[in-house]
Length: 431
Ligand code: ATP
Ligand code: MG
Image 1 (spheres, rainbow, N blue to C red):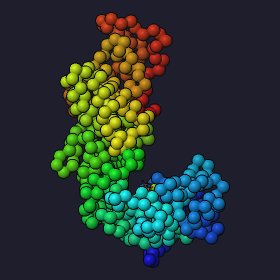
Image 2: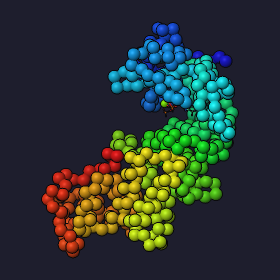
Image 3: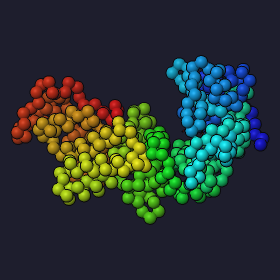
Image 4: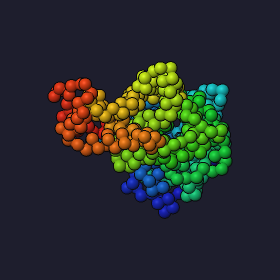
């Protein structure tokens, strides 16, 4: 299989936009008699004039041969072994060309056709056709300044078209995560999905149930924490995939989740924060995504006689445990999600020691941001939002005066040592 080779005059990639370390690694490979290319998202993003997230390298050298060339490197990976090569603060992934997906020798499959492990090496052409979409299968040689295209990815990129390499249905079955990648690329790159590649997506989405929850959690983060949350969310909805990822959400007969202003705003806020360079946490997004199922469960417990607070706690545990079966949520995040939820009923009390404690909670700011979101769906919360917004503008003395003004709470003011020395800060940042 021959590649179309595009010279600099045609592709126009400016070498200075390519990571220096990647070029250096490729030069070292060349000097040792091997080939090395920048592949995947790095090439695609350069051609789209976007800033590549990373520069992955593909080579004909085996992991052991690569390891032998770079002192600071190590072989990693079980599903597919590759080499991490380090330099000051930077890490590059160098992968050996992979062989055909149907080479039975080193491959194990489950009944649905999903490939579980596969470690066979192959030629550059074979490596190209194993990749997911044509626009992700371009090889860039920064020394010769040439692009090698085995699958028509360059033309597709020019047409802004996302096309699966090979038979889409089969490729999604091999790895259902590819449907989520399709949603992500349409959102991030503004490409359109080619009709044949789009057709099987809804059905293939059902196979996500067979994918390990930890892998799905990683994909959810890539979808929703990369400044394209709103567009990714819309793409997921379009193909009924959001419901596959969050089955506790109510959906209509076509698998489209009922999405209210709370969810829409949560996505918009996330994008805004990422664009402003502010940290974002999956804990907050999960709090928003699971708020509706949480409330349903909590009502059930309240009917059984639990207090609003206790009902939220018990229901929160259940809702998170159920979600973990689909997209595992590491504890450090789920603990924050629970905290955001369990603080919500506490906002109703604006006076006395309890209100004071709430204002000084470590996660106050995240919980307050969440209260704002809730007020988009529940107007009765608007005055509360205003109260908690205004109080944050005041000095400590003024805050204290306001919270303890009635003196009716029957509690003493906090001892001086308990009083905060700084104003509450945005806690969403440190989780
Ligand atoms: P970005 O890094 O911007 O999210 P990317 O295309 O680089 O996008 P990665 O997850 O970094 O995505 O993967 C690097 C490359 O590996 C892809 O461009 C693609 O060629 C290949 N690849 C990744 N995941 C799959 C998959 N599930 N099936 C087939 N090929 C894949
Ligand atoms: Mg990448």
